[in-house]
Image (cartoon, rainbow, N blue to C red; front, top):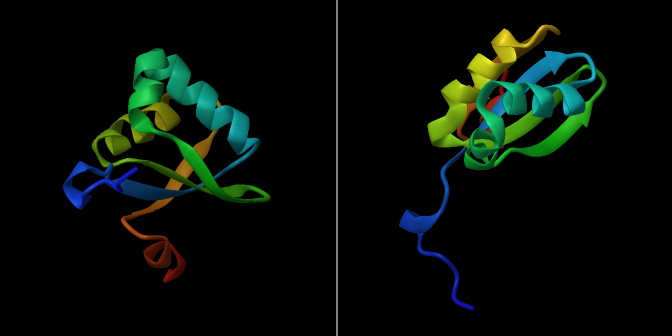
Length: 92
């Protein structure tokens, strides 16, 4: 199988998020706000998790949708930084 050409690949953005019980709450927030279709469009994947903080990657077009769903969710979750690379998140 041939690899995808760069123009066909998804452009990802990485979000650095703080809060409690993040793995479950992030999925619930996106699912409640945008439904199953929105959840599949955002291409959510968890990169790195520590206590109270996590890094997720989402599709570039759905960053606003993810931020809005986290803001509306009853439990407090805060997006600390958004970057196009993992190295960019570590700089601050």
